[in-house]
Length: 101
Image (cartoon, rainbow, N blue to C red; front, top):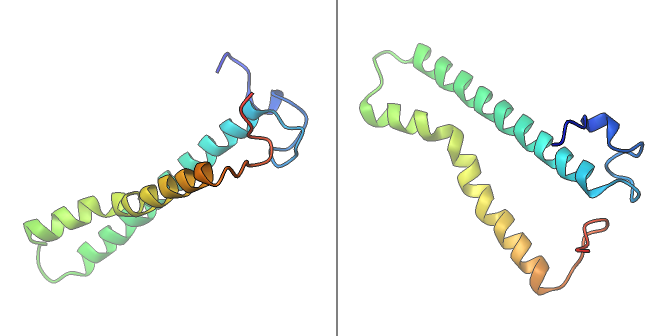
């Protein structure tokens, strides 16, 4: 990102209308990465505790489902976000501070 640190971009918080598009874009990416890492960690811990609580070794199908579990949330939310973006474009609704220049 050009060697410019996030907190040195501009003095405004990301929810302020005067905030730059670059700072808002970086904020979205930071929040996305934090949520992905947090969700995957949570699901891995759940799978670990389920495995420890089980009486026997999980079958191949159970192992496969457990391995794919962290991606199930992204698989369900991604189409909804795409639909929201598409509908927003068709209705010509512009988000504040995100206009094309």
